[in-house]
Image (cartoon, rainbow, N blue to C red):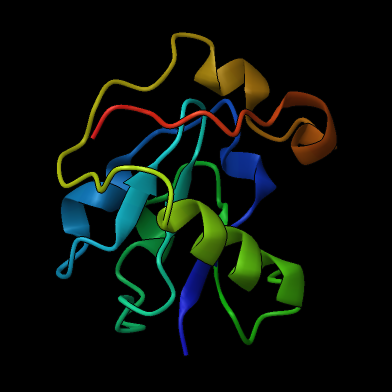
Length: 112
């Protein structure tokens, strides 16, 4: 079992989840985070810390199977992040906007 980050993280990237992760399994892109599913210990402490409510256990219907592979593929490309950074200034505006994966996702790595 693992947890996955879904598309509501895009352009929000609050990073509160990074602070509480005991195994440092978060990886950072230009405008979102992902969890490496092979490193996640399924503790769930990140879930309530996410203001965007973008993190789900892989058993949750909101965590469609594509999200596991999406998180895995970008975790292998992006740098690991172990400390909370500043969220984008307009994060609250983007929280809850639909269709962010298709319209606003950036595959560029962030700074770890």
